[in-house]
Amino acid sequence: MKKYRLQNQLCMAVMALFGLIALSMPARAADKEIKIALNSDAVHVDPQQGDELTSNIMYSHFYDTLVRRTADMKFVPGLAESWSLKDEVAWVFNLRKGVTFHNGDELKATDVIFSIERCKTQLMSGLVRYIAPGQSP
Image 1 (cartoon, rainbow, N blue to C red):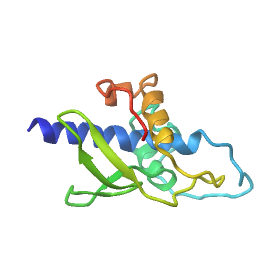
Image 2: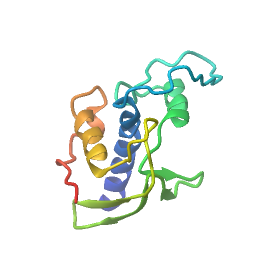
Image 3: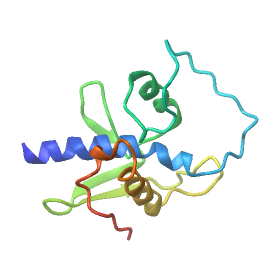
Image 4: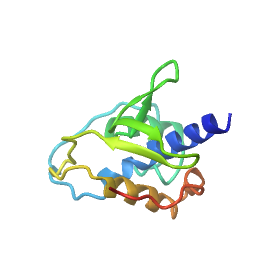
């Protein structure tokens, strides 16, 4: 039960955090436009600033996560092609190769760590308050 709850907390934290990776990069294609139909205005464009339905729907169009959930709530690869429990409290995520930001920079473990650490200072910090500082290989 503890392991399942830890997995859920980690998954939620990772989903909320990875949106920040895109926010930390300067816009290269500012002249491009994305149109999304929503039933109301999104309150946030930063997933670490709040948890509200319309904003959450929008995030799925802008951001990617380490892991995803299927309709039947199974974990499947996202930015992480695989993951494993290193010990009782540490997870290892193997990032998918060839993932780039909109500016062409490759996704690195330090980007993931940055997002998690940034979340600790944001409104949604409750999602990651128990996550120790990360380490990259």
